[in-house]
Length: 200
Image (cartoon, rainbow, N blue to C red; front, side, top):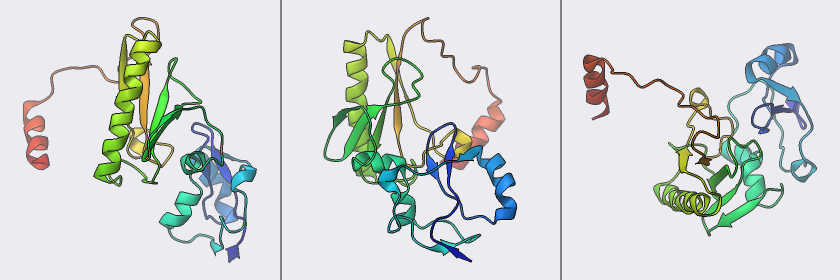
């Protein structure tokens, strides 16, 4: 069965537009797994040429198709609005619409790459330099006491928008409510050595 306009969902946590090819009988299970709800796509990316025919229940979405449904690519192309704050010919910085602190920004490559393992080294370098620039601005202009640079690679690491991005999170000592997501404690020397050997 082929469809021109498959079921549409948007992630409640990231506002990342998704469309998964699944049988109608699995709708309830998929909605629960993805924690998504049905919602129409933005008009700017609602077109038949962007959403080609595909098989319901088929394999993963091809890279070109994934790129076209990417909300960050839509921002780069100017099809969706964003508070842009800086850009180069290879990278773009804009404000996060779900900020952890005042001044929370995102830095992305203009060329689509799903995550840290797929971005080209040169593109990663451009993003890192722009993130450094935004971090300095947060310290100088927002009165931040420090800055966290955060990247999530994969769902297990909290990635919800699958276009590589760096969170630039200004920190305000004792005033921002953020805490370290783990409690530092001595690890098992044997496990540490085993992991080190595997990574060498």
